[in-house]
Length: 197
Image (cartoon, rainbow, N blue to C red; front, top):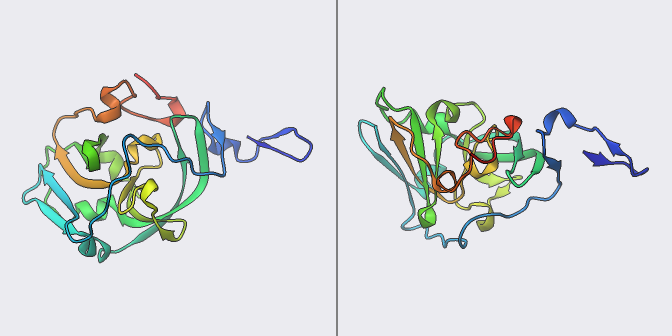
């Protein structure tokens, strides 16, 4: 909801704001732990688990992959929503097409710095708006927003859009990630208000 000059609530874009959410122009910074240091010389992104051959990308190799730009609405479990955010990076489905995935793979555990994890169904990650992003708002990501690499899953609450991604583990069975183990809803659909289990 927005407030007009009269102070009355206006329903601008209300069809894009899930139940229980409020619109913000800011981009709040929320995460567990401290902001990790990035060392370009040692950083890599691993793809492993139920794949024929595990892969590892250096940061420079990752940046050489074809980039896609998306505009997406994002929704945080803490009740803020931000519309028309601009991200640039590698589509998850394009990255995963570079490996031979076992047919039994149904889920992905996203491994991040400081032992943070989140779990997402592989089918969800194959959507055409799911990115491994290295740019936001036409600028490089800032460290507090996930530099050098952040997953962006717009159709889920934003904790599923994990910061500081380092690994993608393909799995046959679902396993709960960091916040999911601590009571956050496994599905995280903002339109169903799947905040907590």
